[in-house]
Length: 276
Ligand SMILES: NC(=O)CCC(=O)C(=O)O
Image (tube, rainbow, N blue to C red; front, side, top):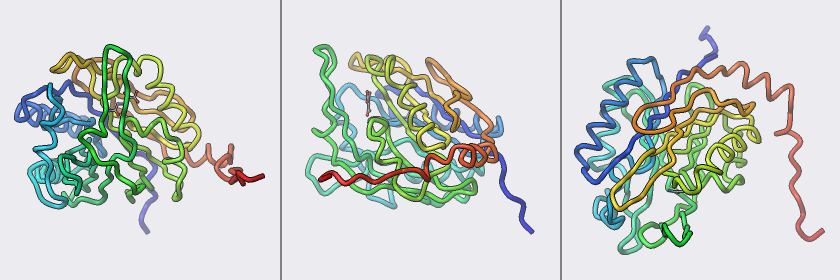
């Protein structure tokens, strides 16, 4: 009889990616290797791990077809080489809209096979008079919620700005693991990043694995970092504040199941009739 899986060691990798694609891929490889050697079974890379350029349109030129391209091959090979589950941050994939790409998060099994792909649904827009971001200028929005089935339970995929839209995480099946690879701005992250991660973890009674970009990038962009793993009670299990590195933690799945029994909030959900 097979034994129930009770724990998962996970790593959320933090990078400070720049405009040199080869250098970024080499850094990603080194950090994934470090995480695997430290015992991580599931390793997650941050959003845009491959490139944080001065000119955001540079990413569109790199967009690859689903199921074939250098980034997908790179991630598949890493997962297989180190025998890990690998969440490939985000990579640029082709969309049908001219001049645009999808910002896609792919999950690979230890055999290197892609188990799920998710296109970021909510596109970041922000202007505080100093920084201006409008992802919709270069990106198409995805319109499908994506869950993957892992040895540890259902995993709900999301990307960065998606964290502000709680309904994405409430779709069935109720996930055990949430992933949110990010490049959160310093300006918003200072107040909102940890708050959002802990809120999504608590309201879904699920673990949140959130790798980020954390430092200074070309074009003056600064990211908040604080890559984090949060448990279903809202406790921060691990955090890497600034610069390259990783947050590594052992996740107790028995504790997670116990919490859902002690506090059956997910079963108490009501669907509202807005006409009432
Ligand atoms: N890349 C992003 O989606 C950034 C989101 C962000 O910084 C936020 O405040 O939300």
